[in-house]
Length: 281
Ligand code: COA
Ligand code: NAP
Image 1: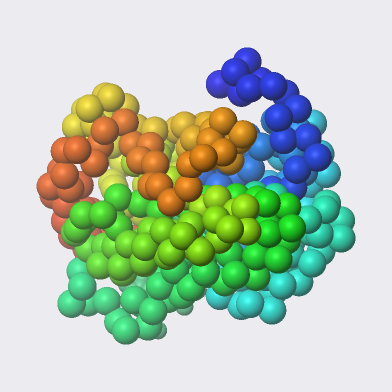
Image 2: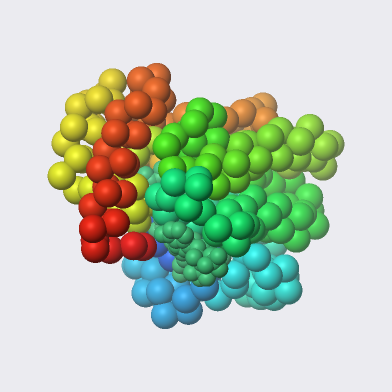
């Protein structure tokens, strides 16, 4: 979708958007959405090579300056360096998108304590680290934060105990930050995507043979696209949402309405295939 058909092309001109995990998938799609509407965009992730490729794709959209800077959201000092470089090269951060995450399917009884901790560290602590360390810039700009969460935080999905705990934690943290930071002019919201086609997240959760069945079970009859999530982020951080803070916006074609039973059956079969020598992500 050409966003400029629906929003002024310069809607985010002069604004700086920082996207954690912006080197791929949904987060890269979100970063591109802002660039298409004129923003300066910074992205971080652990692989500089991946960020360099993504930054080229973003720059090709003709927005403002683009920065790809490696930073692991589990390492506060790396985030501080990335935020400082962003302020120096692009200007203070107006919008922070916390999208960095890790996921894999695993039965709870086979998940090691370190496996659980790893996902909590990336998703939940990483999202706090980014919000906390960008606070001064966001407060200066009266900015906005979006957390990218998931349905697992709101109902149990099989073999996702780590992700459920992490994403539920993020959505509670989101409301706390919205409550406390409104007085600084910062709005804080979450976007909860449903299953999004052609993403690493889906590759890790569902066997490709199952995708058609999964799509049929979604009330809107299709999987989501990265553009669906970008459009929601743009709305929530635009002046049109200036009185919206503390909400989880579900962007899932209604898939959450049907519960997680359909997912769980497929996940079981996918896990069994992995146990028989299939790939472990
Ligand atoms: N099943 C069970 N446990 C797993 C696992 C799997 N598929 N993958 C990793 N783990 C465990 C490891 O065994 C390890 O625990 P241990 O020390 O007790 O053995 C722990 O998780 C950390 O693994 P490690 O590979 O060292 O973590 P990492 O920090 O290098 O990578 C991950 C983080 C595991 C989340 C990795 O999958 C990743 O980098 N993901 C990013 C991309 C992604 O997940 N995209 C989808 C987003 S929704
Ligand atoms: P993805 O492409 O793998 O995106 C995750 C990004 O996070 C990657 O670019 C990864 O880059 C980065 N990352 C991982 N660990 C990091 C760390 N420690 N520090 C910094 N960056 C890190 O997967 P995706 O499917 O698009 O998922 C994007 C977001 O959407 C996630 O928050 C996910 O939970 C959410 N979501 C996805 C779906 C879906 O259907 N795909 C559904 C609901 C919610 P590096 O590995 O290079 O660091």
